Length: 119
Image 1: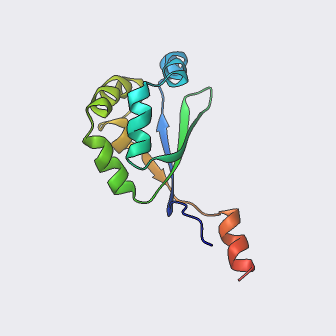
Image 2: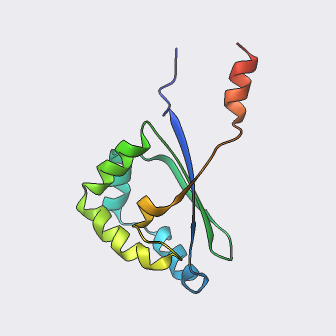
């Protein structure tokens, strides 16, 4: 039996303005319910955000298609509102946060290497 796990792991980086970090954390402690549902409905799975005290933000999620997940969110009204509000929290960002992030390259994944080892 095969699992139905998403095909792509996406990790990204943004920089939160240090003076806005406390408010950024507060906003993410209670994300709007319709935003949470839109993310789930458009293919953003196992989504987490991590932030350092200097504002370095690392995000991670799994999806069948990054392009489809982003396009699906772009079609929602709630995402337009959320991105408009969140954009002001970031340094050097010319696009909405969900499009302007720096995608990081995966160089190691334990389960992938274990799977190859056991083949």
